[in-house]
Figure 1 (tube, rainbow, N blue to C red):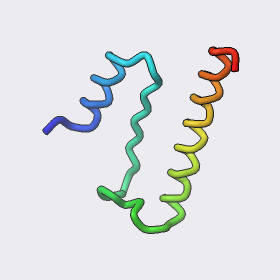
Figure 2 (figure 1 turned 180 degrees about the vertical axis):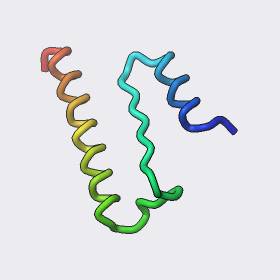
Figure 3 (figure 1 turned 30 degrees about the vertical axis):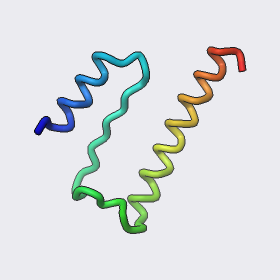
Figure 4 (figure 1 turned 120 degrees about the horizontal axis):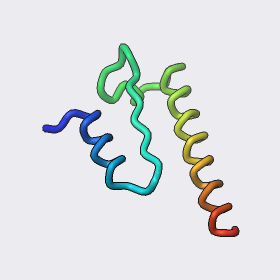
Length: 63
């Protein structure tokens, strides 16, 4: 099974869209299943990133 960094790098090489890969130290797989300060911070960061991408696409298409 490919490692996550390898997958992210491969997607970056082939995609014109932004690709973000973040490693969160001291977490385990699916750590965000339960409400926590860290899970909320992650969700906020993802929302901000997606909002930025959406705004840039809208601006580029004249919307």
